[in-house]
Image 1 (tube, rainbow, N blue to C red):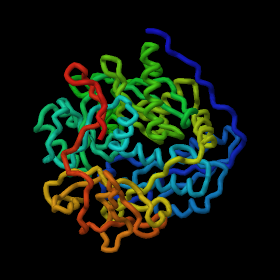
Image 2: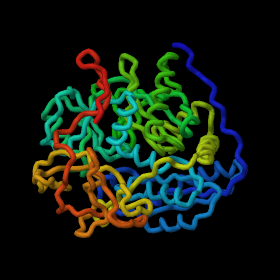
Image 3: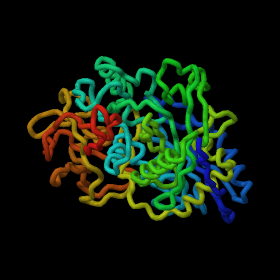
Image 4: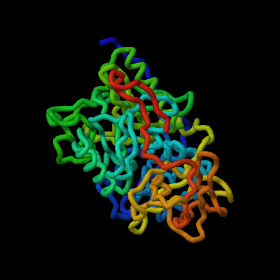
Length: 484
């Protein structure tokens, strides 16, 4: 094996700062949704981070954030905010709302900007961005229902997971399907259990690789690739990082995997993996820090599975208790303080965000709602209405009706908008795109609404979902990228 090592300098010194560490306060969270299965963060774990930063001369205080005290961010004073709040809203934790509040205040902070956070937190948004940038990624499509036909370009085996979930929620052995019956059963499970579309992808057999990235734009750096290896518990089973691998301490999968960092790759493959990681990260507007997960196929192609903004920084005594990002930092000789110093550097150097997240989802009072993250002017467009898919009937959860009476399913962010006879958002057709446009000025935090009774004037006929991504096998199909 060729030597692929390369020097990674330790982060330089930073003048003493007054730092506020933000973390998700899990003692105040609304329960009753599928994300309850994910373990809560340790409320005491941030103390070790405080000590690490204090060892570098900083003055640090910690503040637990939940929906009821988000207003505290409006008056927060700090030289720098170490933002460890990571939530989808659907799990009861504010994530995007925290980033948006920091951006509105102009406070320097660690981690993703709202634009990167929003894009990477949606698996389909990520896949579309990767396809546009021609980044290798598994060929796949969305199925909003088990009744929707599968596109003929997709061949078994396939991998099925929830469109909008994280932490491998909804991923287990049954996610790998080998025939039509298994596919339909798994799609039905995902749609019914998680209330979201099923993302169906070509399964890529190969090595599990991850690359950590820090910074943004041309200043982003890729740290050495890490490989996850699978032990005997995975013999005869799909070699995947499932929910059990990451969270179920009673499962054999939780402890029977290994970490090799730097991964044992030849020089050419090592360079290619890091190049593709940077390409994927930049395609999504990556900044702050993140992690790109791959499957490295037998022919050496690195296929991007996920781009994770604000990936886990959890540290523990053993690899199974750690996030992959800290393990990679350890491999280059950084301790915890070095890692956080690097994140502070990237936050201080961040330019003004080019794009911002338009809205945030929230699980509230037993249902999903959407809220504005910024003040929206009259006539301002938030996001496209689509993609639009055929629905079985108008009784399907979240369906809309077209002008010709056909029931359709739409983008989940739109699907969960509240109905109102006098809505603050209206669909506006512009050429080949249907947009959501503000019908009146909207304030940050305001509930977003739409009139579901108004029929949609779609710019093009509704067809079955089209696949996006790069085909893995050039022998049975051309290796190409299909645009949505």
